[in-house]
Length: 463
Ligand code: ARG
Image (cartoon, rainbow, N blue to C red; front, side, top):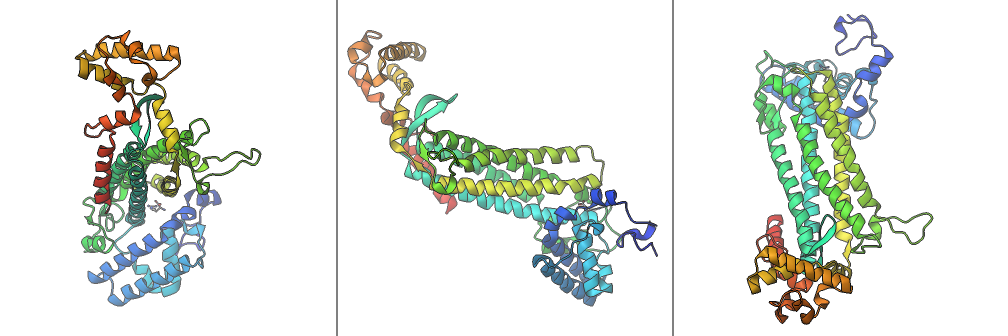
């Protein structure tokens, strides 16, 4: 028998307990208690399988499975004393099970190790996050499609270099984000399907001599199949990395949109009004309404990127199979997942509530010679000028308007004809912003009819 103070789970070869500092650096219970429900689900599946394969008795399995439910309800109701000396959630649960059911508890850990146990628990947790990620994305996409439908015809400036480029429609701009978040959705679904293999039964690293049934536990836990290689099963954290990398790309999209909302809601732009529900005031400047939710979304993205880099760094030098380094996989993923879900929900709320200032959008769309390309295209179509020359002529007209301090449509025909004799009155038809967007009928273009087609396609997908 080992010394009293050595660990009750693995203390057989130890004469003394750990140093306090060792306990502090070693324990993960402070954070991995979040895996309690997954740990208990995994253990219940394992116990049922041990009985079905005749490795433990049916009555022991029943006792264990019932006892685990008691432990779960204690944890869920907050009546559980987590112990740092017991290191992690696995040993906390098992130790309490022993207190609750006695001797049969000691049979639960047959044919498994904490290595396959933690991989299983964490996978189940991350799998739930992929599902929450998917619901969050779908809700956001729905809100964007609704905005696009409402404003399929509203004209706004399209930017490159944040300089007015060509008029686009509000609906087209919203649908651009739909495409981005739809790719995030597709990446999340891919990753979820790829990660859905059960590590349970890989044991410490080599498999086990007990005649276990890994297909049975895999199925009980909703996995598509057991992972094929025991070494890989216990040392793989790709599922967490894929969660973080898909989350990072989505976070980057959220941040870009947040940045646009910050710009659009400023007094200089006044493209949108964000709702009071997603803004805050200033304690000193009474006129202020700040887009804090957008700013915080933009900022939270850093911790998601950071988690991705941190876990890549944890994993990059590890020899097969398990190393304790891998205990550092969880906190960052927890934090990234929490903040991703919050950012998605906040963005959905802002998009649902925001009001486009249609008149300002249209006025801004007309400024900055935004229909210069339409003018050049007209010269090509109507006068047969090569595009390069049409570009040159248009440039001269823009310079003329700039000098006069007016917009392109304000130039008279006579003035235009001093630059090119080929110009006729018909040119004025293409200089308005509504004509401009309506003409951009190419597949994927900004014309309201094209936007409505995309909205309809998405509504069907979402139905
Ligand atoms: N708390 C550990 C972790 O999160 C569980 C696995 C411990 N395995 C071991 N061989 N020490 O990784």
